[in-house]
Image (cartoon, rainbow, N blue to C red):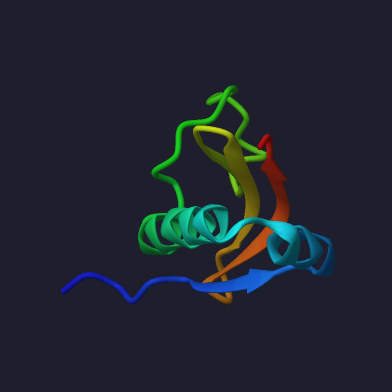
Amino acid sequence: MSPSPYAVRVSAPAAKVLDALPEHAVDTVWDILTAAAADPWSFRQFDTDDDEGEDVRYAAVGQLSVTFWINRPLRRLTVLNIVWLG
């Protein structure tokens, strides 16, 4: 049996960006976060040798990128930043 997904929290600055996005971009953000909550380390990083920063992850799909922090003890993802180049 696989472990339950991580809970997702959105920081206040990221929530403001999320509120301003078009509906299809919001859907994409939640698709990314659903995948990340199931396996937070599944997104490759630019610097894979960064042991100290392994819990800050970056996921990008097309014109959208999401930066999130993995809180291992609480099993939570906190969305730090959302960038939409649309």
